[in-house]
Every structure is written in C-alpha cells, then in structure tokens.
Amino acid sequence: MNNNKKFGFTTTILHSDRQKPIEHGSLHKPIHTAVAYGYRDARELAEVFQGKKPGYRYGRQGNPTVSALEEKITRMEDGLATLCFSTGMAAIGAVVQALLRAGDHVVSSSFLFGNTNSLWQTVNLQGMPVSFVDATDVANVEKVITPATRMVFVETIANPRTQIADLARIGELCRERGILYVVDNTMTSPYLFRPKHVGASLVLNALTKSIGGHGNALGGSLTDTGLFDWARYPNVAESYKRFAPVQWGMAQLRAKALRDFGGALGPEAAHHLAVGSETMALRIERESSSALALAKMLDADERVAAVYYPGLPLHPQHSLATELFRAYGGLFSFELKAGTDCFDYLNRLQLAIPASNLGDTRTLVIPVAHTIYHEMGPERRASMGIAESLIRVSVGIEDTDDLLNDFRQALDQ
Ligand SMILES: *Cc1c(COP(=O)(O)O)cnc(C)c1O
Image (cartoon, rainbow, N blue to C red; front, top):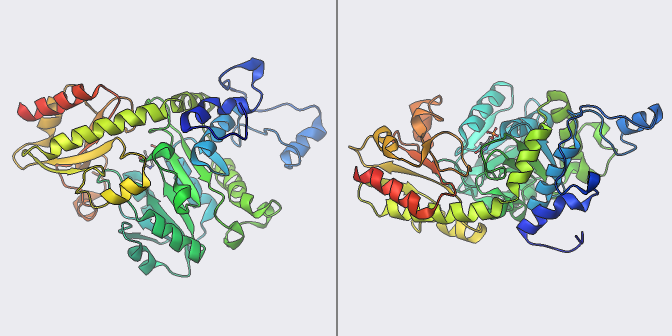
C-alpha cells in the first residue's frame, strides 16, 4: 500500500498495519505478550532508555501490538500521535495527571458521561477547581474563563441526553486564549466526526465503545491533533523540552501518566480493539440508520413523552449535527408518558438487553437515573436534564425491522 496515497476511512484502517513490516508477513499485527525487550548489548539498552534509539523498554510504557493500534487511531483521527490506556477513564485521568497542576482551572461541559462527572468532583477536591457550564453555547464557556484556566473539556454528543457542544466556536475561543481543548469523541467516533476539524488539541476515545465495537475489551486513547502550541503551555517539564514543541504533550503524557500511573493497555485487548475497528464504518452506518428509524417511530407514538436524538429535526442542535457529523450515531434516549413504568417497559423488550455498555453490536438499554446516574442524586440529575424515567438506547447492528418490532410490541403490551 502506497503510504502517501489518501484512501477512504475503512481502507486506511484495514491496511494500516502493513505500513510497517509485520513478522512473517502476518496480515494482523501479532499479539506481543513480552513485558521486556532484549537488545544487541547493554549500550544499546541504555540508548533506548535515553531515547537516542527507537525501541521498547518495558510493557507499561509501550508494546508493539498497542503501537499498531495507536497508529490506526492516529490515522482515524488524522492526528499527529496517539497513546492508548487501559480504559477510557484511564485516558481522561492521564490528562489530569500529566497536564494539570494544583491551582489550575478546568472548564467542563456539564453534560457528561457519569464517571467523568465523578472524576471532576475528585479533581476539584485535589485543588484544581472545575467549572461546569452548558457547553452548547460558547458564551457560557467564555464567561467562566480566568487567567488560571488551562483546559476546556467537552463531549461531542453528550450521553444520555444527546446535547451537542458548540464545538467549532469553543475551538476558536481556546485557540485565541491558548487553552488546551480536550474533546471526548466517544459518542461520535472518528468515523462520524474528527474533532481536529474544530480545533481540538487532544481527542479522547473510549475504545471500549464504537471503535472496538463488540463489548469484549476495554481501552482508551488520547490523540494529539498537532494543533496545540505546547510552547504556550506552562505545565511542560524541562526534561520533555528537548524534543520539538509539537511532541512535548505526548512525551509528558507517556512519562507522567502512562509510565508513572501505569494505566497501560494490554496487548490482547489491543488486538481485540484493532480487529473490531476494521468494521467500525459498517457498524456505525447500520446503527445510525436503525437509531434514526427507531427515534422517529417512538417520536411519533403518543405513549412516548420525549425522544432525544440529534437526527430528529426538533433536536436543538439538529442543524449543527447535520453540518458536522457524517450521521447522527447509534445512541438516543427517551421518556415514556406518566403511567408507563420504565422498568415494565424494559422488561417487555425481547431483543434489547438491559446493560450499561454502549457502541456494542447488540442493542442495549438502561434506565439511566436508577443505574449509571444513581450516585449523583436527584438534584444534579435534574441540572443535567435527566428525568427519572429516562431510558437510554445504544442501538446495535440487528436487522432494523426486528428492532422496530421489538420496541413497538413493548409499547403495545
Ligand atoms: C464509556 C465512556 C468513557 C469511559 O470509557 P471506559 O472505557 O468505560 O473507561 C468516557 N467517555 C464517554 C463519553 C464514554 O461513553
């Protein structure tokens, strides 16, 4: 495959391993389980440790199978470089551990994955105040920025209510102010959207979800888009400044987060995620078209009180989603009218499985307030627009008619 030629999304993923020689001509990057690596002699070992020669040192800081996956993700995101972590949360934690110092201020969207919301509470207690804002309007972000603001964190489509951040205008604001712009791309995935196009500095993906796609491996990644000027960032340690400034962020993340906190991705998981990613575009096309059909059907049903899906014309950010995303994705949520118990409804579904993952090949449903958002309590839930009866649906790749029939028969019963 010609390295310089531009291929389509799936072709690029399928053939990325072969950009470098693979052992025995294997068509997949093999699973390398070794934790340590031998060298020609002790001097070469020292040179690898000092970064004077390329090579692997120890499994916590890098692994050939994981590197092959990192290379794939870099291509998906059209980025500069990627680091993988054991989970999506470990990747978010890495940003905090490697790039923030006591007294730094963080601005975060208040429409967030529940565990990220919980992480920000901890970060706040550790001396880095976090301001939560309605990030669907850049004005709310701008209002809370102070000279200590180091980072703005948003999700593309927020789970479960599907609010879409004012992605491009926040990117513009961050660029002007020299603030790190971290975008969690999990809900869109690089197939539907590349945050680099709106000026993201770092792109986060929970590989567990759409990229791996089969609910059989955990993983997370951070991609440096190459857009952020690390020379403007005050928290880079002198020891990482021997590289060109574009590399400072990844160098510090690899050492201060991956090496020192140790949330490394295992090679077996990396293999599952890499193989899963080959069919990502096919899966997401099917999931998106089924989600649109389901959302429309439920929206038209008088027994349903509300449906939240960016593909519906009345969604507040419908036109933004149409402009930015290739499709509207496989996740939506809805509320039943008073009188129908959400547990009864869920128990009548025959195909959709009550479970907390998303981006799986199987359709998964969950009563949000009673499970993933239970810990945060009713007040914070209300501030995030989460009704007690809200049901989140992560649409899988089942045949669309089967899904429509399942959700309809559960209403009819
Ligand atoms: C699942 C998820 C995460 C965390 O990923 P894990 O691999 O489960 O740790 C982060 N952000 C979003 C938007 C998610 O959906």
